[in-house]
Length: 75
Image 1: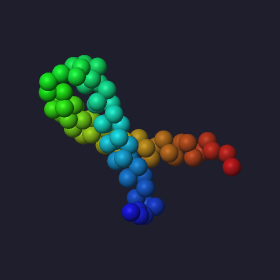
Image 2: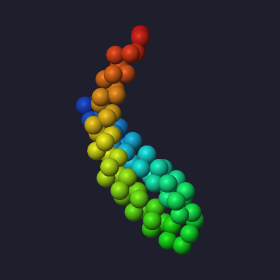
Image 3: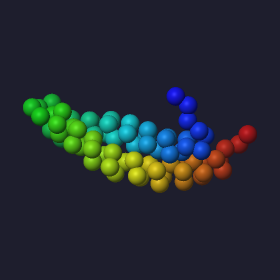
């Protein structure tokens, strides 16, 4: 699958929000409730909240961080 370069920041932010959401929600659910009955349902609920928060935050943060890092890069 190919994506246009102009969509790269958006796709990157969404991918980061999803991947961080799934990992962090899994770890936090595991730490808070352990592997108990209903773990998967609790994890998926936490993941849904994580994505609803993480993707918009990533959409706002990734472009800002990218611009600042590009100013720091030396060729």
